[in-house]
Length: 126
Image (cartoon, rainbow, N blue to C red; front, side, top):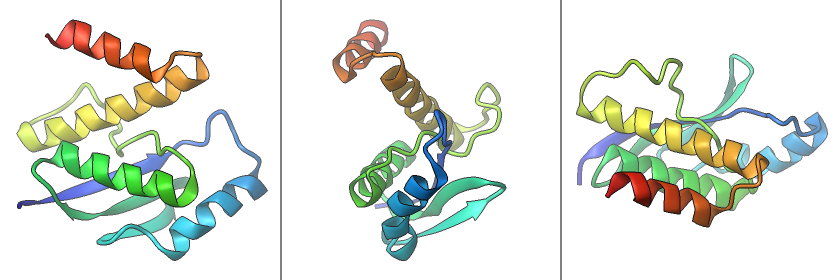
């Protein structure tokens, strides 16, 4: 299986109290997913690393699931600053993962259910 780089970012919005955020992230800082590191970079909580998977999108999904199970937080970005600028197939999957993570995060705070998100994706993808 090929190796893919993975970057996940947690944007603390709407903001959790700093003490709660530190408590939630402590297990992740102590024990990040295999092949990954956790760090606070430019004020953002980040997990970066390498993961073997069928695709970069699959690698991001696997690490995102592990991160959520360790700290209870769904990281809501994939480290893409300008998602409308993408080149190449592999980077395109990273951008797509970033947009999905951001959409899931925002939908949660707008009252959109996971089923509604899936229905939208299926409606426009087919």
